[in-house]
Length: 472
Image (tube, rainbow, N blue to C red; front, side, top):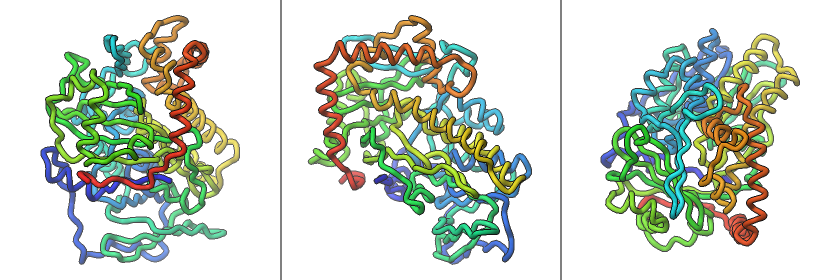
């Protein structure tokens, strides 16, 4: 079961502390959203104005299609997930938003891994195998998502903010019918030839089709907050993402352009369930468990109450149908390590345009087209998931902390961290070598590996069916 964050509360904490969100247009409760004229039919209706929905909408509008996008909130709105990858940049170029993203972003040279008794091991994107961009950016998702949504509007997408999709009907013939409500509770009906579900963790269609499954191979939870006064790396590495391990999971440290640092711990649910104190104190106690990380944080202060979420890894059994496509987090969400979420969402959206256009032109999507699209999506998820499921193992820690460019291994891993997994970069062989060495190392560390497996099994015996309230 996916645990959704309490977004209105999170928006409130950011509006009342030292990291304000840009002002959003406040709805007039007495103003009814405009009902589409009777008989009006859009080419495509998109549910959700996050990176997947905004990307899909912009590309479709650029190709001359009539698109309406329903977004339940008003942008800018809070969303966790600040770190972008180099392979996002070519998509920004094709959308025409690169300069806007650069203006709000913190330069990100790569990723670093940290372990006791060792200097940080840094993987710089400039070391990749082929010509992937040599950097990325860290962003505030409120600003980033707003840039993408407004770009879609400029391209011609009809954006309906403050409108929540409630139900959908797929008649035997004719357009898809989507029932929605505005913030005043007024009912709206939209009709479209094709429906794209980019609703993120709301998983609009997966819930209605009963196809969303808890990930059988992964179970984790997170506690996080934004800090001021955290020690940064120097020079071009000031914006590098830092990763640390501890006994119950791993930490991220993501520097932001305004001087803040997003810090969180992704951990086994049984550890979060052990909390017996306010969330702020629990987060600080968790950070103290790693002396290397705490040395950078000990003089810092939380900018707003800490937050937590649990059991957030899932996947749907269905990705597409006769008149619909499910993209981004609406289809699957995996652990945020390696910062893959935004890239997978935007890449899937751009590739999905071909499917939507095939339907709009031919009235159907061929089985071959659907199979190609789904194979690429599932292959990407499988590639990243293999590493994500094992990132806390003793063998994985040793390998990331002891990189060698044996048979192109290091450069292949940099390309992987840059998300260069869909093009012609010959990444398969170095990843195969890495996996082979991983299994050999796991056998060598068999005692530590068995202890890890015991904790891993315990994680699946613990369910977190709630989200903590900030400061509770």
